[in-house]
Amino acid sequence: MIPTLILFGLVFGRWWRSALAVTAIGWPALLVATSTLGVEPRLLIATGFALLNTGVGVLIHQGVWWLFRNLRNQGRAPVTPTRD
Image (cartoon, rainbow, N blue to C red; front, side, top):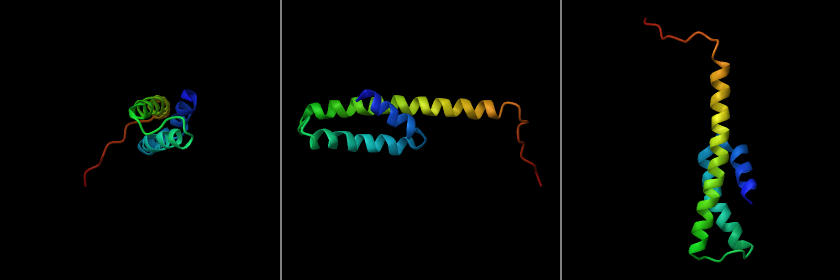
């Protein structure tokens, strides 16, 4: 499931707050619904790892997006505000 959560972070990394919120709620709900884990302390640990894995995907997405914007704007002259 680790690659799935990283992929989720990569795909929805633009909306990183929402992606992490969905992971924090959806992953434990999925584990409880499929009877993989009950409501127990290990569920918090599993949720933490899910957030960590999704966060890795989000960080990769944000890093690539930042690099793309900087390379795209590299040749352009900086915009300076004008005074009236």
